[in-house]
Length: 205
Image (tube, rainbow, N blue to C red; front, side, top):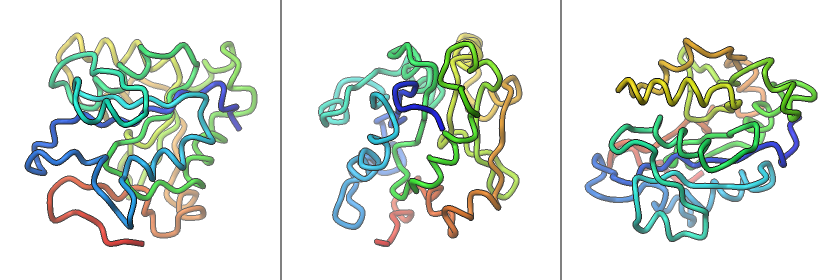
């Protein structure tokens, strides 16, 4: 499994919350804790540093987590990934969307283990560019591990005005984590629950 020293954790938060009437999703409270606090508790032991990628100055940049600003305005999560890479020289970026309240430690550990032995060394990291879950046949690029080989692809897509996060996977060497392996550590796949609209706020659990 990757050493925490090789990893920057990046909470991709954006910060405009257009679908929630201005509410900032990482600050929503689920089962007595904000989503941000829940995510920090799971991520912190697994990464050497933790950043939150936000659209710009504001409340999300004032939560005790180092804030990095989107590399390109209004470019969506891809800009957050670019900001995370730009803020760190570590070989790996463990990225999660800021609206996922139920990150399972086992899922994150499976991502780190799948990078392969010795992958925390800079010369070994080239064997794979990303480790990405796949649920129901669809990738989950915002709960994934990216090597530095992904940074150039992300920057190129942003420069060309292409903003679909999933599209970068076509140009990366991806190691997939398939649903059976994910269910072994998160039987109900609650890790991939997110909040996109007011009616999506999950029940405590």
